[in-house]
Image 1 (tube, rainbow over the protein chains, first blue to last red):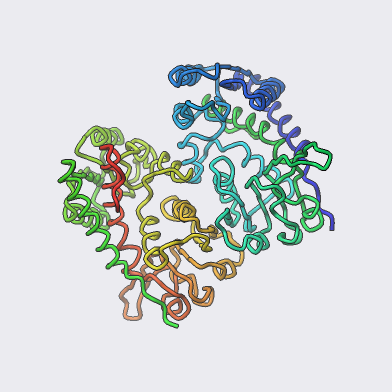
Image 2 (cartoon, rainbow over the protein chains, first blue to last red):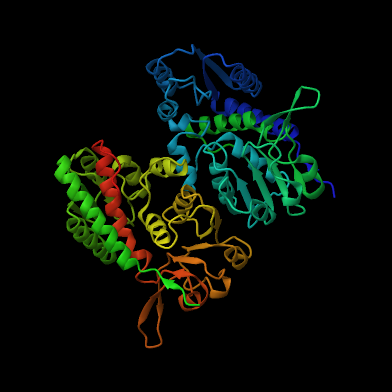
Length: 294
Length: 294
C-alpha cells in the first residue's frame, strides 16, 4: 500500500482563494475591509521572513495589512502602548505579535493585552478558555490547519480515534479541543506516556507535534491511518548540508498509512492561510456580521 | 478480587481539616480571613440545600461566609451589580453564583462578570484558558476532587492511562487538563465514541461523568483499574421509592477494579471541600502570599 500524500500547498491555496472571495463579498456588501496588524520586535531573520510572507498573503487576499516594526530594545510600556492603539483602531480586526519576543519583554503580559476579539493567533487565555469550553473562539492557526488537512481526507471525524502526541499551548492542547468539537475520541500522549507505539497503534488519526526528528515509526501506525506531521526539524545530510524532516518517519509511514502530510509542504503551508481565515472571522464578528462561510 | 472502596467522606473531612489549619495560620500570621460569598437567585430547593451546606462548611473551616439571596425575578442588571460589588469587596476572596440561574438571566454574562481572581468555581473563561494552557488557575471543584481521590490510591499518576467519559465544561474537559498536569496519558471519550468498552479496557484510571445510571459495566474494566464515579442518578426501587446510583455498575466494578468510589459517599463529598481549598488559594493569591500547602 502506498499512502495518499496530503498536499498542503494545494489545500492552502484553495483556502486562500476562498478567503479572498469572502473578503470581496464583505467589501462589496458591507463596505468592510478586514485588516491584519503584525507587530515585529527586533530583527530576527526567521521572524522577518514570516512577517513578510504574512504581509504578502494578506494583501493578496484583498485585506489591509499593517506592519509595526519596533526596535529590539523597545520598552514593555511602549510595546503595550502599540497594542493598545491597535486595539482601538477600527481598521484593525486582527493583531498578531510575532513570537518569540526579545528577552526582557514579558510575552504573557503582551498577549493578555490584546483585545480577545482581535486575537487572531488564538493565544489570549479568554480564547483558549472559550475553545476549552466548547464555545465559539479564535483558535490557534496551526491546529486549525491540521483539522482542515484531515477533513480533506475524512469529511467527518465523528467517532474516530485520534492521538495527539505533544501537549504544547500552541499546538497539542488546542488541537485536542478542535478534535473534540469534531466528535472524535481523543487521546493526548506526551513525553511521559508509556508504550507510545501501542497508543499510536489504536489511532485512526495521528498528530505528531513533539519536535523530535522521525520519532514516530512506520510500524507504530495502524494500517490505513491518517497521519498529520506537525514537526519541522532540520537535520544534517551526508554532504554537510541540512534537510527538513518531520516528527514522523515519512518513507516508512507512506508504506503503512492511508494518508500522510509531507514535511515541508504539509501543515506548514496552512498556518498563514488559517491566519487569514481568523482575520476574516474576527472582522465579521466585530462588525456584527454572520460567520463567513470559510 | 474485591476492590478497595475510596471513602470520599473520610478524605473530604481530612481535606477540610487541613484547610482549617491553613486558615488558622494565615489568620494568625497575616491577619487574613478568607471570605466566600455565595449568590443564590430564587428558591430552588436543591440549590438552597447546597448553599446551606457551603455556608456551614465555610464557617466550620474558620472562613467568613457571606450569603446574598436575590428574588427569582431579579433583573440581569441588578444581579450584575451584586457581582460587581463583591468584586470590589476586599473581605470577599471567592464568589460563587449558584447555578442553574432562573430562566431569563444570562448565565454566561454573569460568570464573565466575576473577577477571575475570585472565581472559585473555576468557570470564567480566563481560568478555563489558564488551566487549558497549563498555567496556575482556579479549577472547577468536582474535577479537583476527582484528582485528590485518585491520588489517595496512586500518589503519582505519571504515565498512567486515564479515560474520561464525558466532555462537559464543568467536569470532563477541566478534568482532562488536571490529568495532563499530573502527566497522565488522557483519552476523552463521549457519546459519539465507538467501542467505549474497548476504550475503557485500556485504562488504569476510569472517570465516568455522563449521567447515565450504571452505564459502565464491570466487564468493561481492566482488572485492578481505579474507578472514579462522577455520576449521580436517581432511579426507582421496587418498593416505589428511589435510590442514588452512579454512572458505574458499582457491584460489578467491585469485583474487577482495584479501587472504586461509591455513590453516594465518593466524589460528591469532595466538591464543597474543594471549594474551600479554592477560596483559601484565592485569598492567598489576592493577598500576595505564597500558595497554601493544601
